[in-house]
Length: 412
Ligand SMILES: Cc1cc2nc3c(=O)[nH]c(=O)nc-3n(C[C@H](O)[C@H](O)[C@H](O)COP(=O)(O)OP(=O)(O)OC[C@H]3O[C@@H](n4cnc5c(N)ncnc54)[C@H](O)[C@@H]3O)c2cc1C
Image (tube, rainbow, N blue to C red; front, side, top):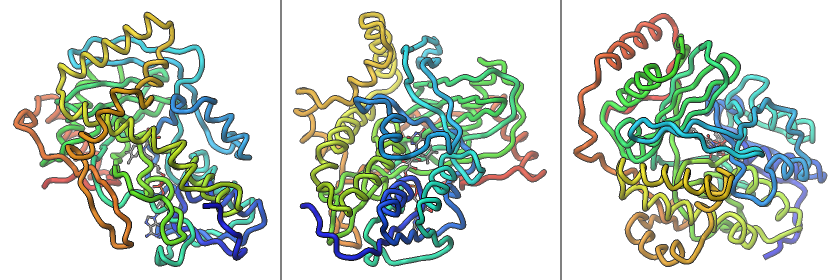
């Protein structure tokens, strides 16, 4: 339904990417925009970690789309990549590549050059008022942009100084990253090694230690740890994106990529669409269902399949990716294909809904089909290597010397 413009005041819950994108567009159109953020600053949910903005789920380059919406991509630092090291589960390394931009690495956090601060500046310059360190009931807001609520998966990373050249490596490995992947990103002398856990684990820090040990053995990192970071991802498909007159955007609206967790593009896009809906330019529910839900669903189906395979399945995926690149001459076409609904994926959807998602009624009355955090498997029990134990001791001493841990490693 296209909205009537009732009031000039707009209240947004959450000053993350989705909320700030919405705030900028609305304030530029003359609305009196108030953003209510529980933390002290935008980006404070993150702490200097690198994230990739994907460039494969849309027809156009995402930065062109941002420019079209009026966002200045020079407001934050980004580094474009067209090639990665793809590390297969048996440690073979191949190189998916494309002539254009496959993704851009940005930094998250509160430093001036982060994407969070770039979007904050644009929102403030457009006239939006951001109230940090405040709480506001979601029922009193027009846009709910408060990020994830629960955990379906977690990621842990270490940030370090390094002398290695800029690189992105992506590793499919069910031992180091149960059900998921780990990655190494190095930009201008700063590195991040991160492992994602799509199965809940005891003493989860050991996965990061073992992952770091693996990268150290295979890359000449000359690593000096700075801090450890992390966060959670909430994966669920709500039955409605507009509920009781409120728009749910970004991860608060379940707009997150179930397969790899690339949620930034959906967050900004949904923030923009919610603003345009408030301005009476489009129907939010219809736009989200047309543009983003098919991508999220395809990712959920892929995730369902990934949950069923271990390293043997990951190896098939990696080989398939390279075969596709050899055939088409472009490594990005495989990533694009992964997000296409297609006949088989559509046929699988009812099975995925029953087999992977659990219906939940949220406190605000919305119904969500959530992916619960999966239980560990027997193969997740293993003894840390000697090098991983040393890495843990090294981190403990860095921590005692002031190294920051911005995310609680779970031990239950
Ligand atoms: C470790 C990690 C790595 C990731 N890597 C990638 C990646 O490489 N590429 C990618 O695309 N995505 C990645 N993601 C996902 C991406 O970060 C999110 O999908 C994206 O930030 C979601 O944006 P958002 O606006 O919905 O939420 P956020 O950017 O999280 O913003 C939500 C804001 O709401 C605030 N808030 C929360 N509750 C309240 C409340 N009650 N009242 C007021 N304010 C509130 C929060 O403090 C926060 O500032 C990663 C996530 C994690 C955790």
